[in-house]
Picture 1 (cartoon, rainbow, N blue to C red):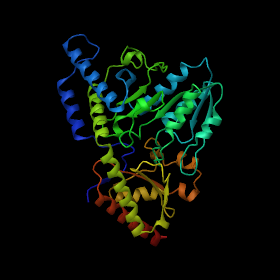
Picture 2 (spheres, rainbow, N blue to C red):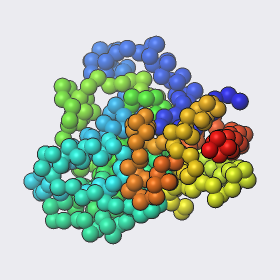
Picture 3 (cartoon, rainbow, N blue to C red):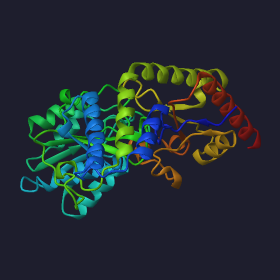
Picture 4 (cartoon, rainbow, N blue to C red):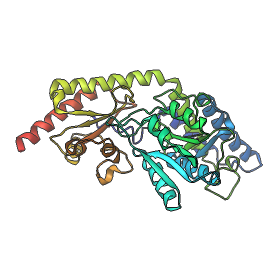
Length: 383
């Protein structure tokens, strides 16, 4: 069996069509899109074309799209950019305890700058309550930031309801949709949101390129200075190959959405079904929401085995999984998401995230379940 990659929530393999487009640009196009000569105009055409494709695919205007270096920068630009333009109204902002650190660390920085932050709790499945958002709102609230899908347990949040609430109170609303794109339908003109963050490498696009939707009329102050690129919202020479690759990845993700949903759900059912047969469903716990979830993220706790031990043993069997967010899993700290969900210590200390995607097969799921069974038996006998 070849190595099995089950960490698609961290990063995904580049789609061959995406790689082909990027290679062509990198070997044939080297102009700067800000230059006025023919090479510059050709580069500008690539950037504008990529912007048009993404806008059409996601249901927004090309002018509402800002290319960034990735999801982290998109989150930072949205949050810092929104509050900087709204400081006269107030300095109260709202988020949740389970956000990606790209959001949480930004809010912590704003706290140091004098902002008041409400960190909303979640229930035991990782779901945020709309009522809690409503209760947290104050007259000086200027921004709410809630992720579309949690990257560790896959719980899908009630974004539409929160967005409607925010709009009714004239509060700006930001959504980190990095994990949602490609597995949930997104039509930006139909979602009550002011800012939405995306990243290419989560949808079989290249690393180092992302995007931020900024609703027409929503205030945004740039964080990066030195040029007038992206309509003055994000200075810096454009990443031509990255933008074109991102556009192709978005186009493919939208076209193949239903098939990918079906494939992800089938892989999920196969893995869980095989585990039930081999070790019994009493030997593991599914962490997350059973009704509102992304099918490709499967967070499981095996109470008899510590997370680091299971990950090491899986890796020895050429199976790559994770302990949580890729930005923190290297430290093997207990997940802030699972803590916020109030899970017991034996579940906290044994959680593993399997995330499926391009290239995964039913046969691989069977193999993974078999190896989990082998690992558990071996560790039990050792004890």
